[in-house]
Image (cartoon, rainbow, N blue to C red; front, side, top):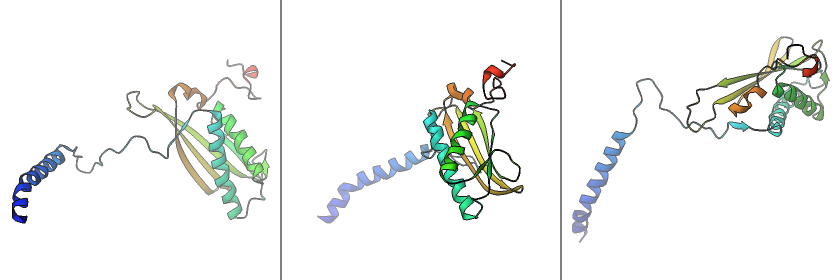
Length: 188
């Protein structure tokens, strides 16, 4: 009986083995030295769609900075927040959010760089080809660096998706005057 079961199931097993082998031959092969493509959207890459999301980013940055300042015992020293964003809407809001969050965490904030450690935050927008499937065409790279006496104490880089239609919110704003108001700008 056992022998007859093997004989009956043999054609099915052979068929399944051949099917698996032929399907594996259809799988994409990568060129020598080139990694195969991975999924386009990482669950860790967030999509910024509102100023409330900006507040979350600012909270994350200030949480890491506050923790670092306390761990190296310089949290009582004044910190100057420098945003390198060309006065973009995002940059102006982020500076305000970060200063507020750091003050809430008990960090002393300075209005000048003199005698202060510097939290420098840079933004870079990357515009991709519009033919990307399953991914937005614009990304924002946010790099935060904590510098004390010209030495890096901490560095953090994060990447976020942003809508291409909102790209202007993250880029240099030519229409801002000395008081962050387009009324005072003669270029607009």
